[in-house]
Length: 324
Ligand code: 13P
Ligand code: SF4
Image (cartoon, rainbow, N blue to C red):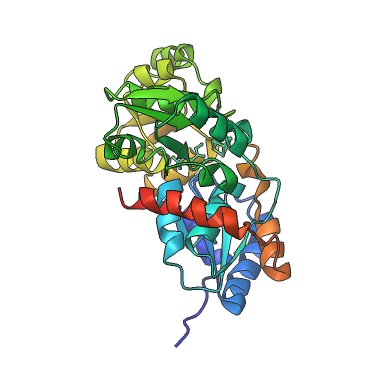
């Protein structure tokens, strides 16, 4: 038997600490419509940790970091997967569950890392370093993934490097992720010059100022941050690892050196933790809204497609990382 749908009014309780009552009426109608549409079209919503709380906590079915979203996309049984995240995440879901209709509410939701490298660049790197295995971050196009030996995310990058048992690897395209991983292994890592436009803006001086202004604050950083930021943080890990850290350690006061919505989403689960919030917005993640999620399901758009010749090779690289 199909149970009663929750209503926007009942969901507000969950997010009242991070969404002021004055903003809620602007969301309520879309939330009710999306909940009904998901049932009508047998659709599920996958939302990344950087989505705003009214998406993350009120309409998403599956939430997490890039690695968790990839794993869970593979086992979705619903007919339609709506990705509340950026384009490479939607492509990854399509690669891993090709029989489903995968929708992205805004095709312009890109990523500065994915834009920093092309398939041709990867081929040139292979020519320059013959025989050296190529690891590509999932924050890349399917065409770039197709040129690589294996993918990685920020959650499994070190394990992926170790799994190759090679003295030298190429890790593309995030220079800072590559350097942060290189600091934890003897394997030589050849990097590319890609940067996350959100995380590259954090500085070691920011951490010094934060520690001065909030004595005792725990600082967590994403590994896309510059190495000098990671070195000064108390912990560095993927978005899911940062969220788990807060749950396990319950710091009295914490700052997440990452995208702004992370703190809101984690704060909902941990009312006893004080979140200091200097953060940087990801303009690509912020292209996804309740309004365009609603239109995506109503109008069945934008359907994610991948050239089958590219998809076959890209799928191999993504699936391989899931077995590490
Ligand atoms: P995670 O895999 O840690 O969720 O990171 C994805 C991302 O785009 C970070 O900027
Ligand atoms: Fe890309 Fe950075 Fe935005 Fe993540 S936060 S989607 S890496 S631009």
